[in-house]
Length: 310
Ligand code: MLT
Ligand code: MN
Image (cartoon, rainbow, N blue to C red):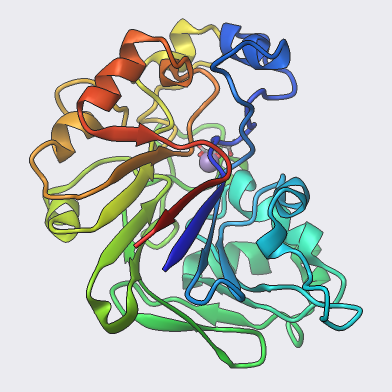
């Protein structure tokens, strides 16, 4: 299986358009060790020809322009795309806004849970993806599924979706509520299976809490692409860019006793890669103590264009 991390940043990207925090400034001025990053998305292929996108970011046009494998082949018809399906892990803006750029009557299949499909169905702008051309297919948690293209042909990509702790999309939050609103099924992780199910690589770009159930699921994995949004729980508050904690944003922080590094330390995972990295996270600075700490704990920090095969 081939995987390309086409977007390694969290919502907003790196630099974020209005962010004047040190790290975004460093990218803007081309400082060494600060590559730019586009918003969260992963492309997966079994044959290197047909690709399944996991999440469709607002930067999708730029991501396709940067990735030859996602562009129409030279001998293909006048309208064509190697992108044959999109799987959504939640309905956050950074994961669904790119769907609007995939209009133009191009057939592909759209997979998500009933809850995520429901959020899209309530917003008529997504009708630009005409359901007769872009069929919606429901993912059932814990049921393995072969991803088929818009015309029911097998893509060779087999996944198992499962529920993880998360939060509902910010744009659906009730301003009066303190706790993050979240219905089960609004945030999922994905097990990507190798042919004959010999190996699993997990894609979990948002995870609010690492439960014992999740650590058991990850045990023995060939790898994980995991939520690397925040290093500390109060990171956005300390950076002066927001009032919410990581937990309130639906992301388990990397550091701390109950943080991701500690919770996954003793779980047998061959390769660990952080994705969905927020523009405040000190691991973005290649020379920071925090970057050294995650690397010492066996984690890689994804960059756009990074390829992983398993
Ligand atoms: C998140 O992952 O917390 C969201 O992408 C935030 C957002 O919607 O901007
Ligand atoms: Mn996000």
